[in-house]
Image (cartoon, rainbow, N blue to C red; front, side, top):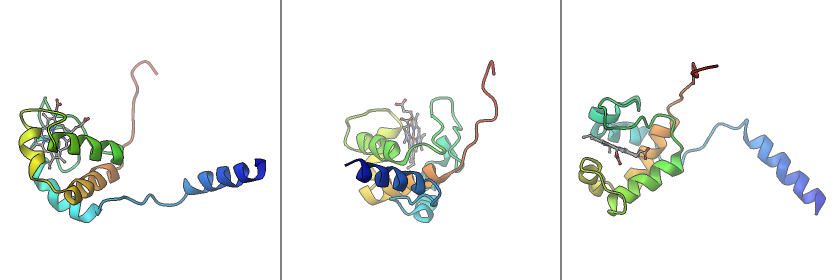
Length: 111
Ligand code: HEC
């Protein structure tokens, strides 16, 4: 049992050095992001006060939120217009694209 756990942990550590694989097609997502850029930018940084930054956001989280907007579970006057026309595949591609944008925290207040 202990041995199995050790192997599992080693695999987990090793996975960190392998480039991340995205469920969605990042290149297809980049093309689709044209529909999102007015509010979220092609760089994933908010262009209007109401819209959040989505650059570098967790891929699974993005898929979950876009699906929730699509099926009406989450509602917003803007996103509820955009999301229903997206297929599940397109949602994955967009989530892959926006999550693949690398972000870096440069400064934290008080630190
Ligand atoms: C007209 C502006 C507009 C467009 C276009 C738009 N969004 Fe949004 N988006 C918003 C706003 C506003 C919110 C915040 C919703 C809320 O307050 O619940 C949002 C929220 C989101 C969220 C949830 C983020 C979170 O932190 O929970 C995701 C994901 C998202 N948008 C992705 C997209 C994608 C992908 C597209 C393109 C297909 C897109 N949006 C197009 C305005 C827009």
